Length: 602
Image 1 (cartoon, helix red, strand yellow):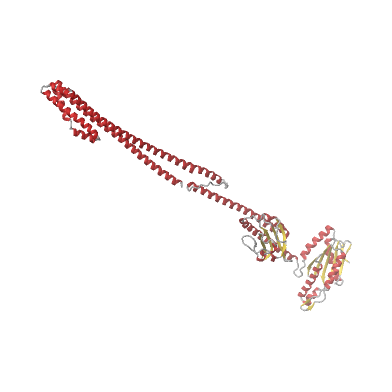
Image 2: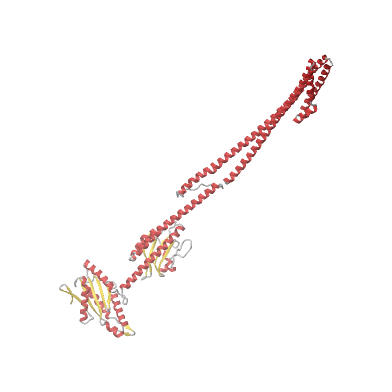
């Protein structure tokens, strides 16, 4: 019940009790008025009866005074007062109008009759006195009979007064009792009103307002200090306090939700900062190994409790090969074909277990019911890798959803960085390779030569340099066209590349000139490899547009460090040997010699 309803009921009850109390007070006042009326009536009757006795005694005294003294003034007074006397009926009517009952009036009427009888005797005595019969007059007025009649009048008046006193006393007692009762009722009503008021004040102020407000105040103070662990008290009553408690409960729930959202926002900001740092590190990677190391360090921080692996596509074998792992994943093979993963087939994230039942990936093996996440790394519609994760068993749906977004962002950044590295490698290969033969070009040769020369000089190891020049190359271009010359160059490049697949490096310097660097080769080994290359070139037979191009030969100049001088002069020494081979008739191998500390041809 609401406080306003309780207050209204208490107000209504107070008003009702006040009205009842007022009515009882009015009734008590009415009883007191009855008491006062009875007393006033008694006084009136006493006055009337007293005047009656006085009239009787005055007439008696005047009559006796005239009989004794013969003074006519007594007679005059007697007759004047006698004339003022009313009849018995008139006196009784006056008393009846005053409230006397029949018994009282009967007693008073008897007294009046005796008084009238005395008046008759007084008249007889006065008459005898006027005739001079004083003795008779005295006998009448002073006789025993006259005295007895006076006593009868007094006795009747006393009886009337006694009866009147009895009735008045009873009326006063009844009125007093009634007034006392109504006063008691009024006092009880006033006491009940005061008690009700005090109870309402105590109940409303202390029980329903003060105590709940104190408890709510403590909760509000704690909530104001962002202490959302404070739990508002439960109030079952439906009133203003209950509404306040409900409002505070809603405020606390909103605060908890706001706190949760702030925590999620802070966690999201932290995670985005982590992803931003990851992106910066990925952008700074110069090689795939750098990228793998960055992923190994950052992946466990972005998705704690999510073991996983990074796979990179090996185009030569057409296989997804594990590049790194973290948090010790228990499932998924280290290497598998792209067709073994549905994420790579479909080009989107695949989760074989969870709320939505799906087909498990083959690379999981027998663990087909494990909750895993496969996220493809794609670039321009081509799968270049994959992120594999194992979901923790106790993770909530909200956490899985939130972490899934971060994993998607992580995969996007890794895929972009991996694609950039691959594009950089392709561009580097394009910049460092000869487009016609596929061999490294002059730029790559300069870098490699500087590196190998430094290692040989530093480590005191051998380094062989073989210069190769196709004999009469212009003849192929002039006779068969430039397409034929290109075919010869490609064929010679293939021979050089195949001959040095395991040891050594072949380069095209430009035109029909090639160079071969063979680290760790001494002079005999280098001569053996040069002779092998010479035979393979001589064995070449090239058909161009249905015609055989004829025999192909080459001239070779060989120099070996440290046999033929300084390492930084190795290319010039080999080039001098090549020039001498061409001068001496071509299709031969000449080895450089040292004369006076300088490079020269033998």
